[in-house]
Image (cartoon, rainbow, N blue to C red; front, side, top):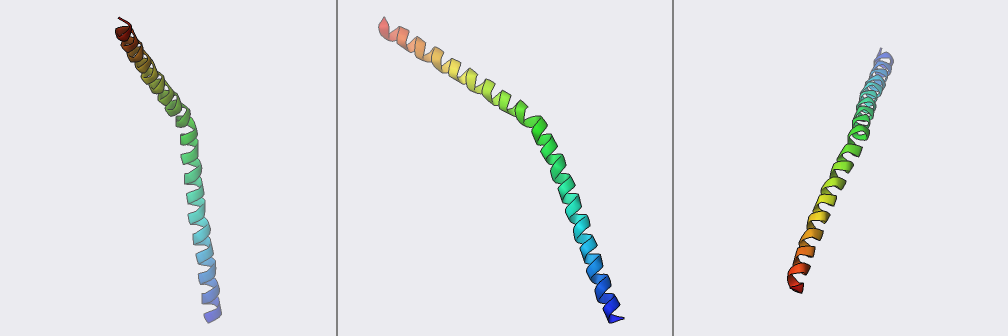
Length: 70
């Protein structure tokens, strides 16, 4: 009986670990799918914001240069 209980506990634990790890792997795949969909949008927005900032900086520098040459 003791051997059966030990074997049963080991099998139950193994099944629990496999079940839990499977759930985590599935969740990780879903997170990666969403990340791969959203990341290009985030990168594009960041690039657009950076370009706006650079354009504003260039305009400010050009205005300062024009004021200095007067």
